[in-house]
Length: 304
Ligand code: PMP
Image (cartoon, rainbow, N blue to C red; front, top):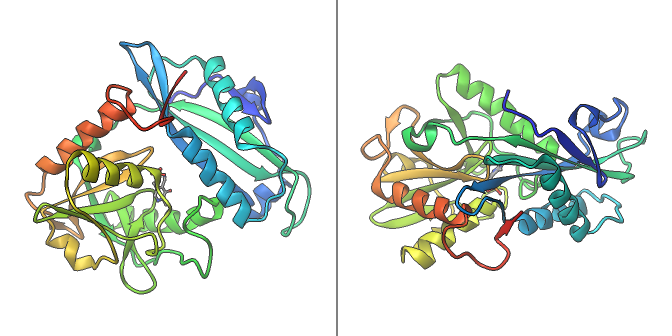
């Protein structure tokens, strides 16, 4: 297991990580009545600062999730922001980390309970993996992506992750690194924890927000880098599975996985079957942005 930060924040109180516990009878444990965010803090050794990437956008998405799930809370986005900063100071990481903000129904209520809502924030050291360069092999899952008529894929409800878990286990059993979901309409959706892009004839294509995907913050960042910095056309539209086999390059995006090349789908090589030049360039630009080396829109890189 990767190294955990020594402390957690429980409803704003800094406690030891060993004490960050919930009761077995909480609706969070019984019914997965919880939403969460996962994001990174990037250690910048030159500036000796940890940059939290798009914290406010993650907190906004968590509040969107709580609204759809009808959580009743008095906490404000500013409070969650402040508690996060307090935890970062307490844990004093000097390495790149991944951290989770978890909002859950506490107490002893039943399936329909809307409160009380508790918040727990934790952090883990999270070095970049070899797959950043080597890429990943995807396999289309026979499990379909949940649709908005079933559960809201656009937000990070914990229960949504059973869909991804089933697909991950299937992909591993079939010898792939990670699954790719199709929607109930047979169009490409996303993976179990990241969004998909393909590059074809110098254009970038990605499933639109109606393709039952999470409203991914890294997807949005990648679109802005491609469009505004690289001057490339980005199409957000329904995508066919066979378009991916014929793509020049493909990549996935997610806060934890960052940007990773996809080198094959269902055992069929994509392009050269190796990381391509577009993916390498957008990765480099992404890393410079998140590590605080290039200018970013206001509030995207929050130094602690
Ligand atoms: N899709 C799913 C299902 C996810 O869980 C995630 C985040 N892990 C993503 C996409 C990527 O979202 P983000 O860029 O906001 O991390």
